[in-house]
Amino acid sequence: MNDQQVIALFYSLNNNGFGGSAKAMTSVILDLEDKRNDVPYDSGDFARCYYIVEAVPYLKANIDKMKAVSVAWELIIQSWDVLGHNLKARNLKQVNVDLDTIHYLAAQRRTTEL
Image 1 (tube, rainbow, N blue to C red):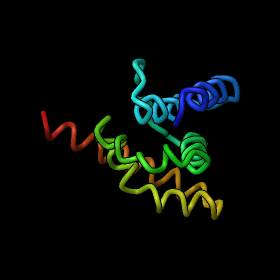
Image 2: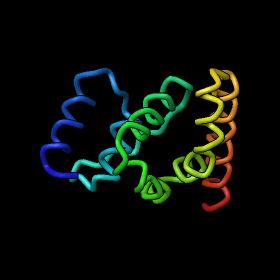
Image 3: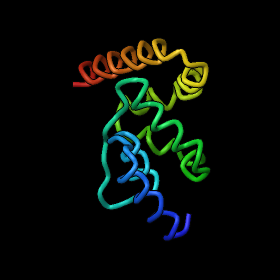
């Protein structure tokens, strides 16, 4: 991405209702100074992440960078295709169940790592 595209993307994110998790993805993938680590907790959060990644090929090509942010992001990226499939099928209840499971597993893994 060139500088103008980055500026346009962030302007769009900050002025069009994108949540913290979508902003976190762009800040990490674009390696911006002010990195965020917010994660999607429900189908609405995930939808904002999913559709920004689908709209910006650079983000999609570099999505694996998110795995290093946290255990939750690692598990979300591993489940990205399934979550995306259910989102597009409008099976939002399943997306929410899957995200709840991911956050539970992430918390369990963090606890065992201590």
